Length: 212
Image 1 (cartoon, rainbow, N blue to C red):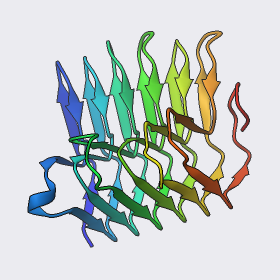
Image 2: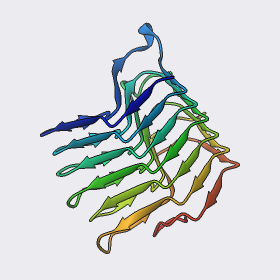
Image 3: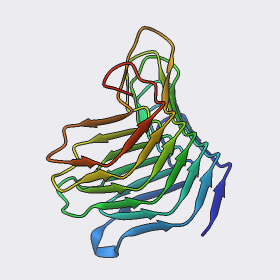
Image 4: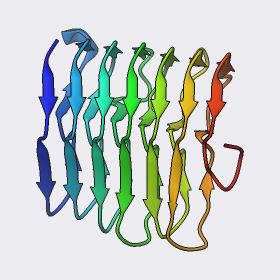
């Protein structure tokens, strides 16, 4: 595998994929694949929305397997942000294709907003049609904003029926208390259809609403 380290994407507008970004990879051209890489100490920073401090996928389908994703940051100033380590979004939510994300180590990734915009998923943020998210360690992730935050470790939105989150370890994920705002869930799932969540372990997490 490759090592992707200490890169910065900085913009006065949107910023995505501090280390690596895949944009508009469509089904007819195959699946975006990253296997057994080290992705660490990368930063995506922007005045507007920021997605994926380490890796950003905007694809129909992807495989992300056996990677180490550590100490990456997504820093947004005036808009929303998500996925300190990894951000994933289908380029078409009507797609029947999905994302296979297995056997990765997510450690010490952060999403931070300087003012009062919501941030999502300190380690991982995903809005995909179908997701297999299995056998990861997600440790030491953090979300930080003056307003409410969602998913100190992982935030999933609108994932389709048949998706699963299984056999993961969520440990020591937290939020930075900068006001009276709340952090909703170590793992936060919004708008999902019949997602399977089983055989996960949660230890020493710190959130204000929805368990930790």
